[in-house]
Image (cartoon, rainbow, N blue to C red; front, side, top):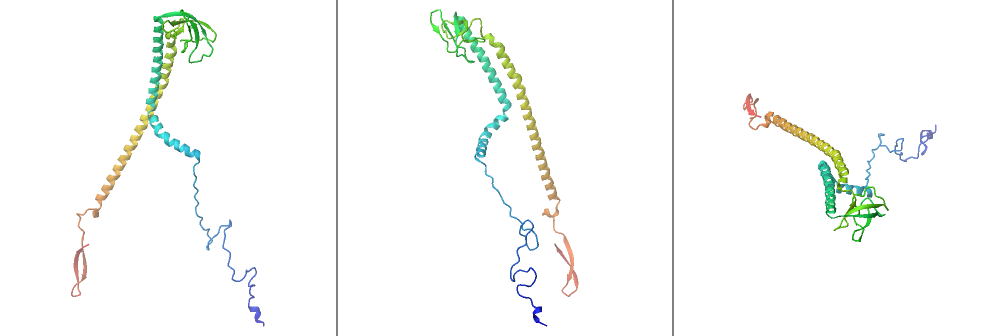
Length: 267
């Protein structure tokens, strides 16, 4: 028999076998992830992504940081702010009536009547008129005519003015009493609307403060109870008291002559 049948030809050791000495390819999972020798997937390193805010985000953060210290105290004092604003509006309305009454008093002290023409260019702030005084002087009051309700440009109207100060002029037959109703309704509307709002906001603030106080009180009681429990537990331990002496024990040991004898000691 030929001895060549029992030997393997180099490079043909088996069907589909690769070259001798070639390393086996690393094992992989079905999704292509390398695996270790036991077939488990090697852990992936976590990746961190840093998101940087854009320019608009930085501006908003900066604006918030600057505005909060100013806005938050105003929010906490919002009921008082509402009351102050209401009182200021009321004071301004009353001062308007007082000023109109003073102008009417000046006109009533030295009255004169003239015919005036309503000029174009008037607006809600003033109504311009032009008239001639009894002395023949043409006057165009800078502040316009008082109580001009219903006047139109080009209209001819009778006016009453102060002889010593012709700039103080009003529509004949009208005075500050015409402002009682609108200003009174304005003041009434302000107080009827804003006063309940201020009281409602203040009530919410008081309820919030009471809730915060109750939470703080409960937390303090819980902390005190925990401290008391810790102290009670520490006082119940024997080894925690330094005045307690260790217990005596008796054991037997060999004596000088080889016989057992009692030996007393402290552990």
